Image (cartoon, rainbow, N blue to C red; front, side, top):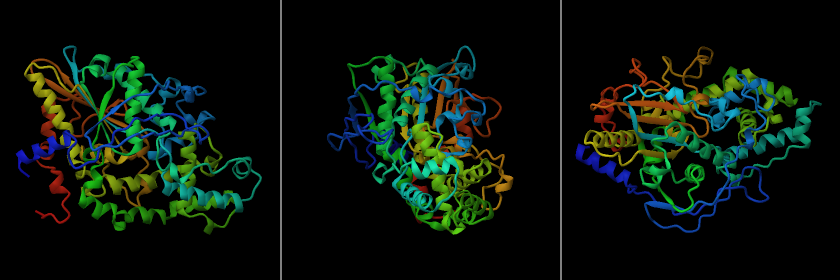
Length: 508
């Protein structure tokens, strides 16, 4: 594709005109009367094919009570309210397990870790790519949970208190129509994140910038992402008591759900069972077999009654009960730490082969988001060099774990020397590719552009509010922006979404 055509595509994506449908919602985010804890009430009132949604926010007080009874333990295992295995929940984990100081104070920030490169430097642009907040299980996983629950309820035996609690007190309250919807904790995830980012970047995320139109919001069309975007905005409007103005967001699946539209990824990976053969081999291997047998022993049922899907379902039940309701569920007693590490690896293995380094197209499917991010940074850099005000001070983009992981992979983060496989679990204990650390609910990649005067621009990446260094640029935590662009020069000159995603493209 020519440079001119690439620019045209990027303009189309920027304007939300890449063939995506748009919805206009007025959405109430809150508890549904009489529903299961954490349910959100969505009230779409009309739909029209427009690029931007204008949102009327209905007041919802920021809820912080979920953290009220916790201590800020370095080891959550010391806290009876937190499952001992919580740090292994992979993509089903709470944001607080990645940042334990938030257990004590959900709005706490450590501004000292974000000191500018020098006194002359000022922040001029922030791109924030954020995963949606805590959600219900998908209908697929709920079905697996229901199957497991029936086995435990009808066949398990024993006098352990946790087993009696499951059989006599716990009810299967997850319903298939919940299907991945945002829960109240997910609303709070984004409201609290918005407040913390406004404290970390007060010159960029400010009432003046928001009212002035310098903060842009983009979201995936999925309800959990739209409602997370609404919640992020509500966190800011409530912080500054804004009641007289509404703020737009754009629904853009070309950017935030690029994986759906990358034909080669869909054909070669997403719809190809062979692409995940390492995952299947691991699930049939000795480590997973020991986990399922230990669960069967604890329940006193035949080994044949507990499949790897059931082991995963029980692990998810523990994770969701904790993430949604802050409950240390009796389901968690089915696992010890060794079991949790195996199940974490099974999920990491799946993410590695389906969204990350396992197949080249996994990361290349994010080319469109990669170019979009650098286009925004280039625009801000150009305005600074021309002595103009940066017209887009902040870009907030809300998507999925499947949005973030391919981009992190394309940028080279969390790449170990050896690939994750079905046979090297024992040697991967110290791996950097660990989704429990990378992709909890509300995970976020932040790109902060600094103007240090004299034409010197610097770029700092953060993941989950913690500074990182770009792979290959370890000499300084905040490298020159031109050095970052030089490092990614091959991707900036190529990595064309249309070319990479062609099903039968020519090979060099």
